[in-house]
Image (cartoon, rainbow, N blue to C red; front, side):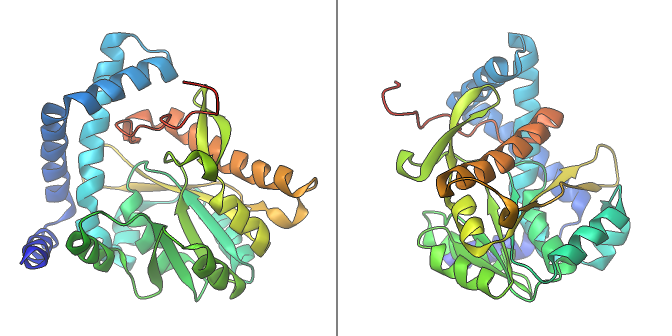
Length: 297
């Protein structure tokens, strides 16, 4: 029964256009702002401390972030609508020749794509489906606790050439995919357990950074490619594809752990640059600095 309800709601939502989803997302974000005072306070304090803003500025930016996050949650309903018409009408690529060159360089080597809970991350899977040349593509995600909801979400995130891989016990699946010169994508800005982490500076404070993507990239001798999809202001709804030059893990020097740490630092610093550039579109309500180094309260 629960899954039937989720499927019905998803089917109704998927009929809406981008502008309506934006309006619903704004309303949802304002609702979250009202009913989640602890997360609201967390976002305000994190923004004030990490960006050096006063209380009023931090509150205003936190509220914008909640509204943007409301859009992010509901953009899942649009994930299957990312097609070539979307690319023509709604996608902005500042340097298409550079993007084409990167995609060509990625065609015959394994790729670990990294992104963050920033902007329209739910739509990136559709762009991978359209643009990435690899025959084997997967997106690694954390499953929701509600199994029925996870099945519905997984179906909406899956595309014809992109599979969804649950985060738990994903290493073997990712290595198999990379061994076929495939692409595996990760969100790399979430908190993680101390045993899975290296502590690196992020927005001015040590944060637990998941070593998994870095370790898998090194083992597979993969390129590490940071990519983000940022919302533009105004109407109609449009998106800017932002990307960095890939890091080639094959040319890194040093001991094994040093190379793993260098890869993790690469994608962490990239996320930080984009969060500073588009702070209102990041997921500030997340307890990013929850896990602390040993010996630190």
